Structure formats: C-alpha cells, structure tokens
Length: 255
Image (cartoon, rainbow, N blue to C red; front, side):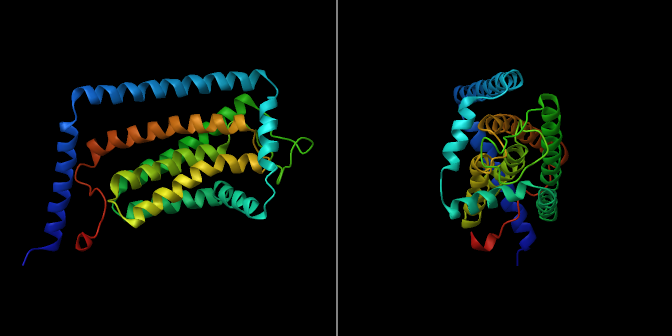
C-alpha cells in the first residue's frame, strides 16, 4: 500500500515541474514584453509618487481633494457608513498588529515559513516607511471646518497609513493565495476578501474625513512599490533558503 506522505511529495514535485515547464515554454519575446511592461509601470509609479509628493509639500491644499471628499460624503446611507467604518477598522492599532501576527502565525504553522517571515517584514517596512514620509512632509489632516471628520487623528496625513498597510501587507497575502492555492472556493473567497479591502480602504479613509484623496493616491503608489519589493524579496529568498519547503498544503483526496 503506497505511503500517503510519499504520494503528496510526488504530487508537489509534479506541480513544481509543470510550473517550471510552463515557464520554459513561454517565448523569449513574450518574456521580454512582460518584463518591459513591468519596468515601465514600476518607473511610472515612482515618477508619479515623486511628483505628487513634491506637489503636496509645496501646495497647502488641492481644491479637487475637497471636491472629492464632499462628493463621497454626500452618500447618505447608514449601510455605507457602516461599511466604511468596518473596512477601516483593521488598519487601526492595536488590531493591525494583532491581525499581522495572526496571519503570519497561520502561514508559519501551515509550513510556509519564508512566506511568514516576508509577510512580517512587509508590514514592518510599510509602517516605518509611512511614518518616515509623514514626518518629512508633515501634511495636516482634513479639518472639521471643511469636511465631516468622524474621529480626529493627531498624526500627519500624507500618505495614508491604512492604504499603505492594506496594499503592501494584504496585497502580499493576496499574492500568496493567488500563486500558492489551487482553484477552489476558499481561494476565490480569500482573493475577493483581501482584494475588496484593498479597493475599498481608500474610499473609506476619504469618507471618514481622515485623509484627502491625494493622501490615498500617494499611499496606493508607495504601497504598491513596497508590495513589488516584497514579492521580489520573497522569490529571491525562496530559491536560496527554502528549496525543499512545501509549496502549500492541500488535500489530495479532493482532487
């Protein structure tokens, strides 16, 4: 009778071989095209963020920021307000730290040790970078005389820490779910949940009157750059330190 652990190991090896074969079958022209697009998008994000940071530092306020906030806050619905509060809740202390540690712990006990380490480092880098930029720019938050502010926060405004955390950390978890899990309702649920948080958090920060739209845009850009760095760091370390680590646990009996 075959050993179940042996069958699982063989299955993982086959999956890895199939992925490697698929990568090798991609034509050089296609790989070059994708690499070029990625580099263009990366440099474009860096350039736009640098320009936006310069404008925010030299211009006290943008009229379009106020217009966008008033437009979003004109949505008169208790359900929408509840959703916006709920979406922002995971980004506040102490729950942001607890959620980060919990997800990293789940990854670790699932055998995804390098993924757990990278996730923790992503959250730390995102938080430190956000605090550094905020202290350098020192942009005030929206005030109650201009917009509805649901809760006054004392920290600076640019860029949004919530958005950076969601894009970098939750974005990395989204990436792991997309690349490591096979197609299933659990995978679809995780992709939809984390993707929804990332998309809605920007709107929630504006609706709650705690950030301007330009704060949110800057955070999406900077958070995306940190996410790219985290993915590249993960891929680099995976090849060097965790060659024999399981890709992801799965139930072979259901396949």
